[in-house]
Amino acid sequence: MNGYWQIYGRLTVTGVMLGLAVLLDDLFTRPLAFVSGISQDMLEQYIWGVFGLVLTMLVARVVRHEILNGVLPRKTGKALPQLVIDLTGALIFFIGICLIFSLVFKRDITALVATGGASVMVIGLALRDMLLSAFTGILLNVEKPLKPGDSVRINGKWGGKVEKITWRATYLLTRNEETLIIPNLTLANAVIVNFTTPDARARRNIEVVIDFDTSVESAERILYAAVLGAVGVNYVVGSPSVTAIRIERDGVVYLVTYIITNYGDRWKADHAVIKSILQCMRDAGITVSFPKSEVIQSQGRVPIANRSLDTLRLVQQCRVFRKLPGAVCKRIAETMIERYVAAGATIVKAGEQRDSLFIVGEGMVKRTLTDRDGTRLVTERFIATEAFGLRALFCHQPQVATAIAETAALIYEFDRKALAAMIAEEPSLLDACAHSLALLAWRESKDSLAGAEPALAVIDDLTNLYRGQIHANYMPHDLPVGTEAESGVS
Image 1 (spheres, rainbow, N blue to C red):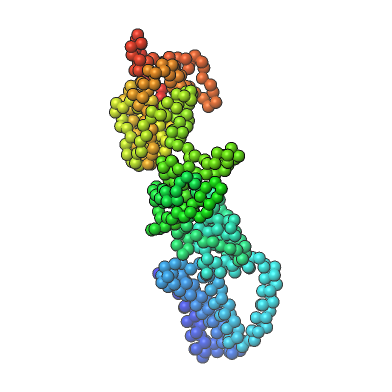
Image 2 (image 1 turned 60 degrees about the horizontal axis):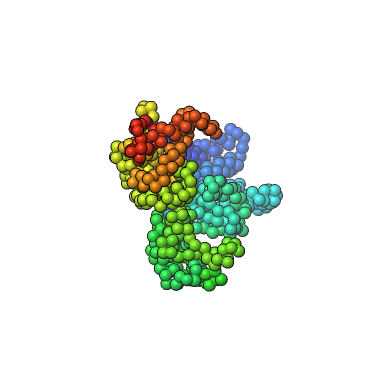
């Protein structure tokens, strides 16, 4: 209530008092004219002029606050741009001033308008770019070819999400989280592609070149299934399609087309679809043709890497097996058990006697356990190439913590049975594993420093420790005295 009084009350009271002063000329204007020495007609003109000015201000406030900021937003559900509101108020004020000079003071406003026009012309020439940017900002706010929240591409080279549109410039947030400020003058003649209107749907196209040995029917069926099987992609109903569009020297080109419901998810959707296509082609034994070099051109096709090669690289990149010979890593990759785990599922429980090492192939795994001092809980997260369960595999100890898949994950399990068979066939593997564990334990210890190398004596002591543990668990007949000790790895 106080706010309304401040906005309208004082102006209304002032206007009413001025109107009464003119109407009651015998009680107010005539005595005031006599005292001041001003003619009664001129005094009435001044009073009417002030009354007109107060009325103009009151009308401008009503239009701005009650109509443009009140009724219209409630009816349309959208707030009007502040630029439109400010310009409307200024226009009402200008019209009111012109009416006061013309009707109250009986002045010819033609010269005033002409003089004002000339002044505006001079100012306009001086501030040409600024004014053009302002008028373009008005058009952008009124016509709304783009609005805050839209994903756009301008002139084929600037793209991002619209943050805000001001009088002078339009602000875009790029994919790299950078703010791009484009003057509205540039947008006056720009080609604007709005990916959010009339809705956020977006058509995506992927071209795949497949060898001639694969029939069109088979390629179409497999590619279509791959698109539909992509995880986490929301399609418009019935959108995926596969079309053989042309024949090239290296194979048949297939166009995979699908429409997603949200343009902002385009990169995530493309990643999921391509990943699914490669997996389906790999499972079906289909090869893709692509002449990357003269050697490849002479071969005629490029095979898609199989799962065993991916698994070998995963083993070689895992810190536990990184120092092992390539042949040993290959044997480990061949014996690992592949497991797909849904998000939130438990992989292994704390205290469970499961003598296995787990390597994360895809996704993320979380464990919560006490630190080495036993004073607080520590949350560990494992991503691709990282492993857990070292004590369980090599030292025959229970799993130290419950491991849960934080996202959908691909997990490889290397168990005690596989390791025992490998050591039985190649006893020298025992020393290699012990040395690798020693280096890993030292890297994770408090004694290690960034960039420092461990002392040879320290590594030898740790290697002997792990050799004794592995020997005791995997070759008990050859060990005179079993040795148990706490390992520094998990």
